[in-house]
Structures are given as C-alpha cells and as structure tokens.
Amino acid sequence: MLITIIIFIIVLGVLVLVHEWGHFFAARRFGVHVEEFGFGFPPRLFSWRGRKKPDGTRFSLNLLPLGGFVKIKGETSDDAVAPDSFAHQKIWKRVLILSAGVIMNFVLAVLIFAIAYGVGVPRPLDEPGVIGAGARVRDQKLQVMEVLPKSPAAEAGFKAEDTVIDVGVVVRFSVGQGVTAVGRKKIVENLDGEKFKQYIRDHASEELSVHVKRDEKDLLIKVTPRILEGGTAPALGVALLPSGVVSYPWYLLPWAGVRETGYVTWQTLKAFGGIIQNVAQGRPIGAEISGPVGVAKITGVVARMGFIYLLQLIALLSVNLAIINILPFPALDGGRVLFAFIEKVRGRPVAAKVEKVVHMIGFILLLLLIALVTYRDIAR
Image 1: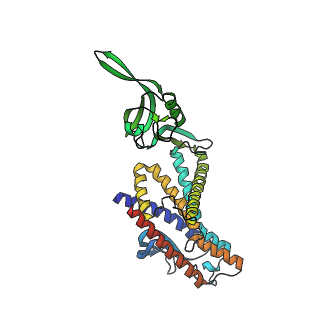
Image 2: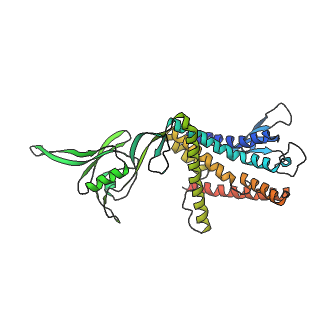
Image 3: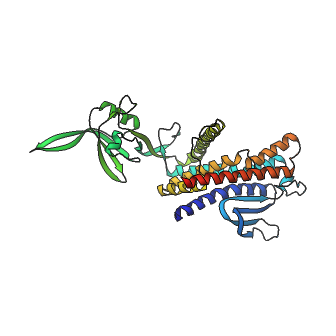
C-alpha cells in the first residue's frame, strides 16, 4: 500500500508539474509575472523565492498533493494597467497562456509513447490501426482474456491471462498389460485467434489438449468443445486476444508517439461523448469513472505489471488530464479560454467580479464531483 501511494504521488507530481510548467513558461515568455508556482493545494507547508528579489516567483509545496496551480498576476482581476499583468495582454496571448498546460500534457504523452515504442510496447494485435508502417512485432502470443462460467474451458481449468502455446488432439493407446498412455497429435503452433477457432470447428467432436503457459509453468489442459447456450457451433468458452510487443526504429519514434497520442485522444473523446450522451438520456453512465483513490489503485496494479505499462499509464493519464482541462467548464483552463472568446465577441471583458463568482461556483462543483467519485472508489 505504501509503495502504491508513493508511486501514485510521483506519477501525479509529474503530470501536475508538466501541466503547470506549461502555464509558467508561456506566462514568462510573454512577460507576465508569475506570483506563485504551487505543487499541491493549500495549506502551504513551505515555500521559497525563485529569484533574489522581493517580487520573484514564489515556489510552494502544499499539504494536499492532488494537484497544483500557477498564480499569475492579474489573472483574477480586471487590472489591465500593469504591463506584466495577465489582463494587460492581448487575447491571443492570454489564450496561449491558458492553453499551455494542456499543450504540455499532449507533448508529454507524445514523448512517453515515443520512448515506450523505442523499447517495445505490449499491444493487442486485433485492434485496427495498432501496427503502423515500419513497426516491428515480436513475442506474439494468444492470451486468454476471459473464461465463461460453466463452459468447457471453465470446467477444464482455464484461467484469464493464460497464454496459449499450441493445441492438439488427445490420443490414447495401450502400452500393454491394461496400461493406457496419453499422447497428442495434429498439433498446431503459432496460433492466432481465427486459426484457433478454426481448429476447434475442425475437431469439434474430439478431446483436445491445449498447451498453455501460466506463471512461467507449462500446462496441458484437456478439454472437449460443446455447443454453448445461445451458440450454434461447438466452442470452449474462452475469449482470446492476440498480442505482441510492438516497437519502431528510432527514426519513426516521433511519428509513433504522435500517432499513439492521437489514437488515445480519439478513444478518450469517444468515451467522454458516450458518458455525456448517457447522462443526457437518463441512462446509466456505462463506464467506470475513477477519482484519486481509483487512479491510485490502478497505478499500483499497473506498476506491478512492469515499468513499460506504467509509462503507458502516465501517457494515458496525461491525455485525460489535457482533455478534462480544456473542457469549457468554469474553473478549468477551458472555462477561462471561453471567457476570453466571449470578450473577443463582445468587444469588452466580462466584469471581473462576475467571472470570479462563476469560476468559484465551478470549482465548488468540481470539488463535489471529486468527493462523490472518491466515495464510490472507496465503496468499491
């Protein structure tokens, strides 16, 4: 548990620091004064000045390590007089400063995916578009993802995460004095999902011997296919996933990082769209939504799987953080960008007090949502 918490805080720290550094860098680049760069939420534990000046940026470490912030001069006021104030900047500069954190999260995802594909990423091979031009695939295997209850596979002892090595037909023959030996024939190796299903269809009435690897142990599991409830052809009752380690040569790594980030972004947007549609139609959400507790648990599980899996999780969380922050909701970066566009359309800014109240309400609603999701995480 302690290791999981430490890893989660490190992962969260990387995501937050990259995001807030984007705001910090963009603000400094446009000559806007950054009053404070904080990791975590107050109360403040300790802080220090970044420069040997009374008005230098204050860097702070706060008690609640569940986020971070950059306090920019003039961001929550209508002070447009001081040249180093956020409110003094042109709208396009303000939009870039507000969007810089999201941009950096996407950049981080691209970088991590590029590094991961340089080493080799375990991926399912039946997803369309998984393998791009120039990809190299090694260690291909056929993995059991699910075992149906009361199926031949369940009765024979198959388990999720078993790796199927080969399959053959069970043969029994006498070796004398009433002793029967068991062997295998018609063995097929280098299986993929379709080849395995075809083998089952071709030997539907025979007892099969499936060679699987489980926790580095080799097992031979005997099983006889039969027609399952609702089915029309004999089957074992396992869901199989062809997978392998996908990598790219060094000169294709930047493109691999961009490609994978785009794919993950599109899948995440589709998931968000499905959630919003279900909520609007009064249907169950249809997806698991996790808060800090749920993400911490997932992080611990993935960390135990291996470093390459942890890298992929960090990239995935970075994309999710970027998408959530760019939503046009008060208190989020996207909400502040929305107010900048409203100012552009109206020709004058929204009153600072009104904007401040709107963002405060949005922040309270976000805290309530986090509390609700966290309660569900703990209950699960």
